Image (cartoon, rainbow, N blue to C red; front, top):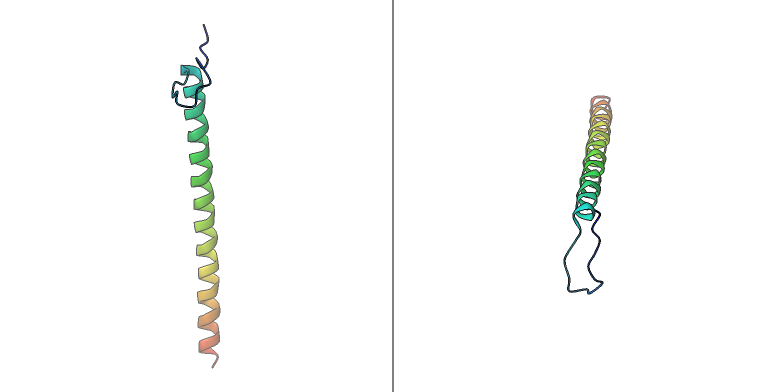
Length: 63
């Protein structure tokens, strides 16, 4: 037997068990996506930082 929302009253906070599970799964999926994106951005920043550091060292040593 699948439960659904009892009513559409905005003050009601009841969420059916299957909807709660779906919501938690969706939230976890979003967290994983955000974490992956943050890690990708960190990696890109590290690569840019390394490249800039090399460029700065090269320009200061050539002067």
